Length: 328
Image 1 (cartoon, rainbow, N blue to C red):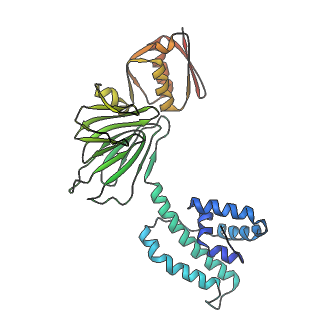
Image 2: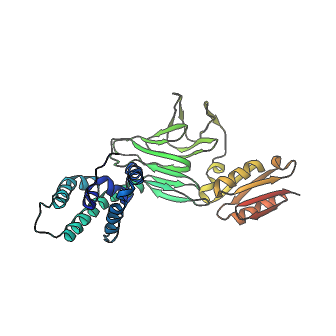
Image 3: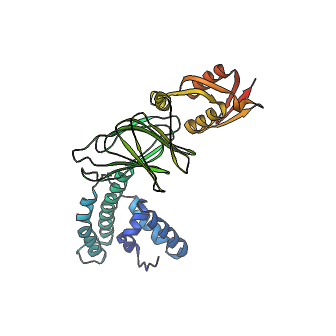
């Protein structure tokens, strides 16, 4: 980045500097941090501008991109005129205040857009299950340790796009113009108009269970598979394949339950790690092959571990973020 900075006022008038200060543009942040490092002699002017901006407070509001676009040119032109002294009479300190205040208005507008875009993303913590609504009224229940992001500006007639990492259950509403609803995962796209389905894209797992409606799966390799209600399809990173499963075993998490059907403790350990972010160690020569069955509550890790201890006749020891399952 090549910048010829003459003074603090120039900094306050620089859009990329404001983006650096308000942390709204990753590229600007990197460029200015590098510039500051390469120009240590300008450090006092940068600090002076930062101190001045920090001394002002303004209630943050959320603006639409259109609102900022309409006012941006006018506001920046006024800032430049003040900085160059075209608007008179005005003292230096008052000029700084005007520039800084106007700059904050502009930057907060950009930050408002940035915040709105960030709100188009949901992330659940370990052990958390959350219900959310999309702009079209479709409902999404997001399982623990998962991320859902969706595009902005949904209008009927255009594709509604969602990106999933983890696990979620979708209840998609049909629109009057039958807009497509597309869930993008690491391994395939799920293309629907109105339906209910469960999808997982986490680690080595990639599958879809269709409860209602119709779904088309499309992989990056060009493979397509049409699903009907009750179908369960897995992707093994080479091809899509249907399997027979119990629907309630896949969607038990929605009721804060885990459904085990002769599930090995090795797989149970992986599930606990996914759901709670803890390390699970299996201790014993044959413990990985030991299986467990039944439905267990999954809204409290300590309660779940106690249930597993009773069901498996193993000793379970938890210390902070590490769990040991010891074969008796």
